[in-house]
Length: 295
Image 1 (cartoon, rainbow, N blue to C red):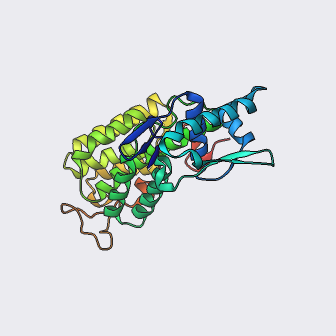
Image 2 (tube, helix red, strand yellow):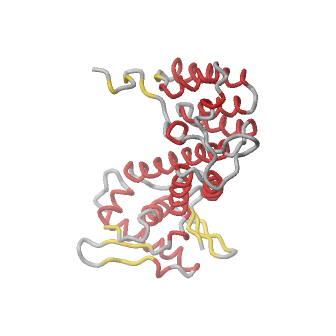
Image 3 (cartoon, rainbow, N blue to C red):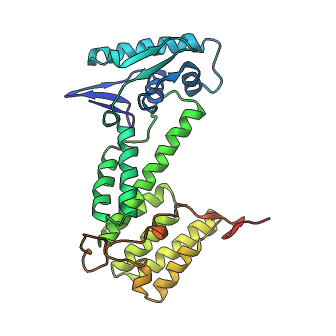
């Protein structure tokens, strides 16, 4: 059984799939499931569905809960949605972490990031690939949601981009290069401000034997980050550019060393030093110096 929030909001049980009808009910389901089995107060739920709850919000919420129970009933899940009496009231939807795609996604990405930092590139690749298989589209599609709830959706969208970047890094660590370029370019099309992906693009070209491609990637990065977006390139990205110009293979790889227990891929050392390539997701505004904000 799986509650799907990533993409189309639906519930899958065996061979049966039930699409949750009505935007308010989808929003209610998302708000409950993201709390991972905890009771959610009526006030919190109203704040998740409406920025400025109307006078009828409590009554409307009760109706939405009843309708959600009605949609869960044919799947044998009606009793999963329980009511808290007293203390202002609240509701809880019982679901194990592995029964909610968004919760699974967060846990798998966290484990994959930890594995990558521990230089277990092969394990990180497997874990992050599993996480990304769960992603069928942005969370919160066609959901009624307040700005508070939408901010949680945006955080998951950001995590999705980071997971894609780190999967690229795990694969770079294992010796893959040119074949990663389409995925890197796709990430940059969605988020051109992400320095990590520009660094990945330069490394993929250079380590794949295309030095001119790496230099061209730098030119595109400076044009996009600096000229178009008004961002100040980091010292790390500038250092990577100099390493490419100097044909310093060791520095381009980020002082790679083979991870414990893993062979290096295709003759390359296998792990990118995570402090450089994983850590930076975006550039700094031009108003900021590398040491802090300018006065």
